[in-house]
Image (cartoon, rainbow, N blue to C red):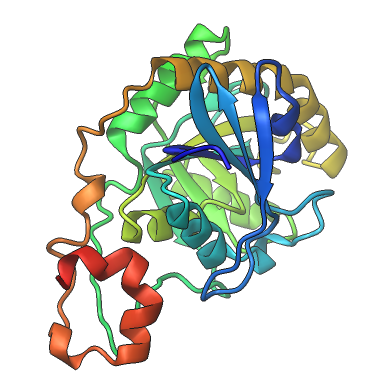
Amino acid sequence: MNQNPKIAIIGGSGLYSMAGLQDCQTIDLNTPYGKPSTPVVTGTLEGKSVAFLARHGKGHFISPSEVPYQANIYALKSIGVERVVSISACGSLREDFVPGEIVIPDQLMDFTHQRPRSFFRDGMVVHISVADPFCPELSKHVYQAVVDAGGNAHANGALITIEGPRFSTRAESNTFRSWGMSIINMSTAPEAFLAREAEMCYAVMNHVTDYDVWHISEQAVTVDMVIDILNRNTGLAQQAVRELVKGLGEERTCMCGSALATAMITDPDAIPPDTKDRLGLLIGKYLI
């Protein structure tokens, strides 16, 4: 296994075959929350160890509501990952966010309703701070990497995650626009919140594939439209990942690595032993 991959990419399996990725190994992991979507692939890129995980499984067979988000984040944490970059498709809710462009959002609204949103339950309460749900430092690096790779990028915007797997109605899409949302997808929540609970930096590289269904002069979103843009942007995503890994320093300067320090409210002596065991990877350093 590659030693200590500090950064992980969650996205499509096409990223595993990027030029320059060497020494690939596959790690079949299990977690207290079950198995992750796929075994984790590690490799060396630009001289650094990197981990890759296909969120929807190899062949894209896992529905957004059925993605094992807890297991995915826990598995990456268990091999030493500190930074996570999500690469996903999104619909644009703004005229100026054009299909083919990349958005690195700075805000997130969770409009899902079927997904476990936290690691903490069964006798332990944690109130994690997510006023700024994406790591500003990592997001800045992702934006610069996309620009350096030749992409047209936006370094702001509010992302709304819907339950899916269906696309929005026109009424829903226009409502989200009236709320000030910029882009829409089906995968970032609760992934971003779980990463914060695991004290990992998290940022999103969203590929705009369509105008959702609100834009009356454009065709309503279809699967074919999404796949077409993603296929065209695969090379851009791969180059951006290379630029990101090359330019990212080893040490984190943000506050993500200590997010739990002021978030745990339960008396350690009141936490049930089974819960302590399950959460040891996340809270162990605070219980010493």
